[in-house]
Length: 157
Ligand SMILES: [Ca+2]
Ligand SMILES: [Ca+2]
Image (cartoon, rainbow, N blue to C red; front, side, top):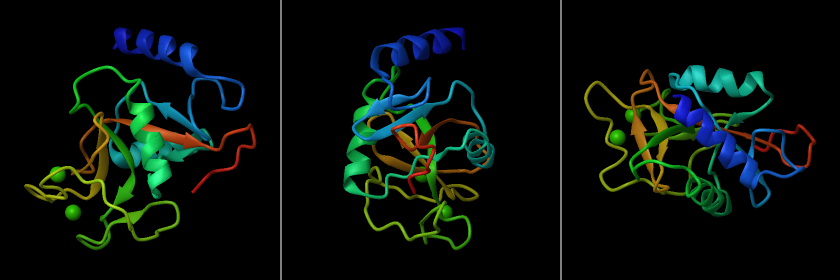
């Protein structure tokens, strides 16, 4: 854990600039926050919102590309997973982005996913390699929050 904290400090010191809040990683026009703690998907959602942010939603190809680039700055194996803002919690296999409840129209699922394995997997994670995986919502994972750039505090949905 301490290692992760130190790593994040180094990471953000190397890549952040004035247009994002302190502690965020800038990639293109987006501000990413990689959590130093783990939580369920719901806890991750709440944590982001506490800081006027949301779980990152790669709802366009540009945003997915920025996410994949941001993840290249993260250490660990390619399979290291982070919660992001998609789910099929309400209707199985109907994936939506959580802030606007819009259907998910692009696809960057890893091979074999969404798998809805075991007793069900209804929340979206992204692996360090940039592809999506559905995972049980009550698993505890690190997560990625997003906040609007340029100090506006606006949430980019
Ligand atoms: Ca599911
Ligand atoms: Ca899965």
